[in-house]
Image (tube, rainbow, N blue to C red; front, side, top):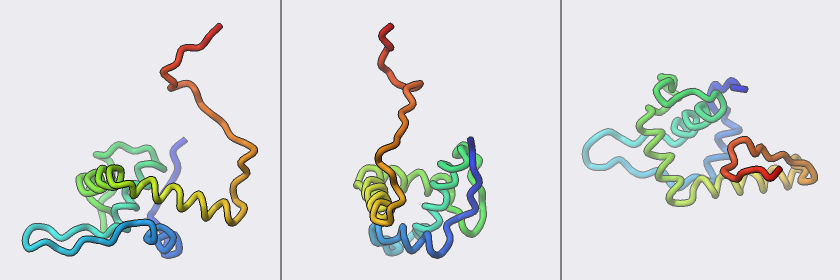
Length: 116
């Protein structure tokens, strides 16, 4: 079920920014790079609400869909997304927020055929 997301709070941003690479400096020409907080806001908005890329909100705290998609691809390729995932899971585990005894797997999208 889709959720609601209005952007990262300052505390949440402090958590995530330590896992992101250093933001690039402005190149000699062209548009300046979008702040990573806005990129992360946009990516989390898509994940939480389930919206399409073309329905990404516009405004101060959001990155454009093209910028967010470009950074998503870069972060996937350079391992940043994996670093974020493992870091957040480690923090949650250290705080005792994860119970590894329970879990669920949804096989409705699995490519394997069921045996009957």
